[in-house]
Length: 141
Image (cartoon, rainbow, N blue to C red; front, side, top):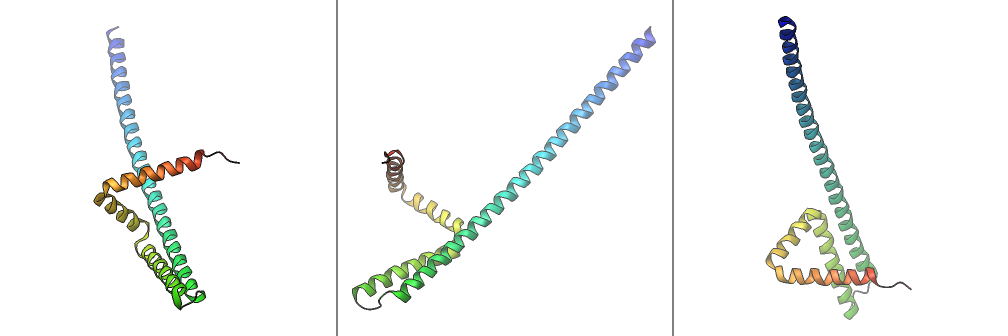
């Protein structure tokens, strides 16, 4: 009887060790899966960011092209010529900025403007929010 009891205790101890080993392996597998998932999410975010910057660059090129078209088709003398030239110059500068800075540069510049001017930024945000809410809740006819 004592040998059976001893044998059962040994088997229970072995089973406990086996359960601890399985639990440790499970924790390690979970850590590995978490690390892999984190890497994949990081890669996806990087890819999306790159595509957004590429799209912003393309928009900048389109704006510069529009500025060139305005220059070619608009009058170049008189008050109309001066106005169209100013519009074309502004569009060209904006397009160049988007091409050079991209979306990340635009975001950091916006952050800097908001940090330097917090109260006007909050007021503009409230105003835009109000206008968007009015537009979205306006009855349609």
